[in-house]
Image (tube, rainbow, N blue to C red):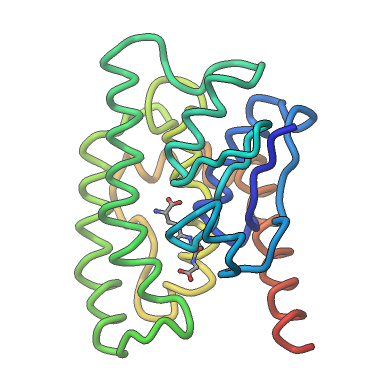
Amino acid sequence: MMHLCGSSLSPFYERAALTVYLKDAASQIKLGGMPCDMKSEEHFGYNPVGKIPFLILDDGSSLIESQIIAEYLDTVLDGPSLLPADPMAAARVKLFCRLVDLYLALPVVERTWPNRGFTQDEKLKAVNEDLPKAWDYLERFMDDGGYAVGDGLTLADCALIPFLFHLDMFTSHFGDAGVGDRPRLKAWMDTVGRGDVAAESRVRAQKGLEMLRAQQAS
Ligand SMILES: N[C@@H](CCC(=O)N[C@@H](CS)C(=O)NCC(=O)O)C(=O)O
């Protein structure tokens, strides 16, 4: 059985895990944890970058990078596809995921995580200057029906949902982390962001945070 390694506290791990849950395929794959210590030789064997998530395949080989893993799992696991059949809609799903990674994840959210070595000024800039731009880019390329693309959940929603926990928990301490008056993002927040799938994802992230804090305290 394949093993998706990591913790739901990681928005990248959670993107791939959400893919599995949305396909109702959790019985087809082991979810969470890892068979080695973080940054151990074995970990670097699976992922030379030393990060999570990584996917261990049945033959012992591995795959890295959350978006690549999510697309792979969407293809090989049973369940409804999270990538539209229409080529342009599929391209827009992938574009949305790319925009999340390039403009929201690293330059904004990760910058506001504790103990990452960024100065207060860098964190304030991330939230007050870079985050509005990221929201603008996403707004520009999403649909207005409450989902990122089309009329149901896709890999694009899987990319954005896990960051909601981090925006609330960490980013909002340095400025307004909300989506503002952008109508498409507001509709997305009402439909997806405040929906059951996002709520369950948030619970998993919170549990991951509590586990990490317990480990750090022991
Ligand atoms: N681009 C990577 C990012 C993965 C990533 O940054 N993972 C973080 C956890 S959220 C990590 O493993 N950090 C550990 C470290 O950098 O030491 C992906 O999409 O999988």
